[in-house]
Length: 205
Image 1: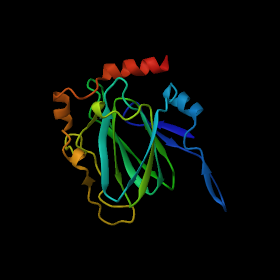
Image 2: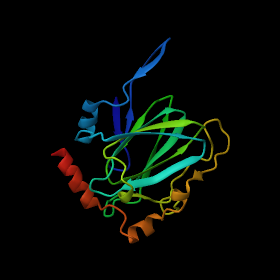
Image 3: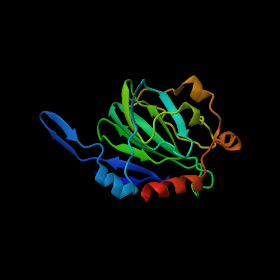
């Protein structure tokens, strides 16, 4: 299992070792030892989610108030998604930067993003099935969103599905009505870099 930190500090791409034979494939998609060595603290699993999305469906950009925030360890068990992490921490040296990982049923990578980061993805084929391990349970009062097509962030969403057909982004009403990054900042919705760092320091302690 290999960890590679992304261009957004606090997020990692995780590549598992796969063992295949005539029966199929086996792999470990999460393991606490390598995770703690890379990240610096355990994953406090509080909730596990699953979503199934048609081609073109966009989910996000989602984030939660810090503390406690919601860290996510995400993989795609079926299909493929273009998975994105966005630095929304006010005061961060990389504020507004994004990076992405292709999660699919071929390389079977995962992505981890710490508390205080924004998360989104677009499904690249029908029935893409995404699994999330979350560090805190869903709490509507402290969950927020940023518009995934905000040009100031400038995520380069894929225009083609995995089979090469044109891909049209499809957003939920909630995500379509989400504010831009700048509007969310003006409203005081975004976590601060200092608050996130303080919370992560407590986890490492």
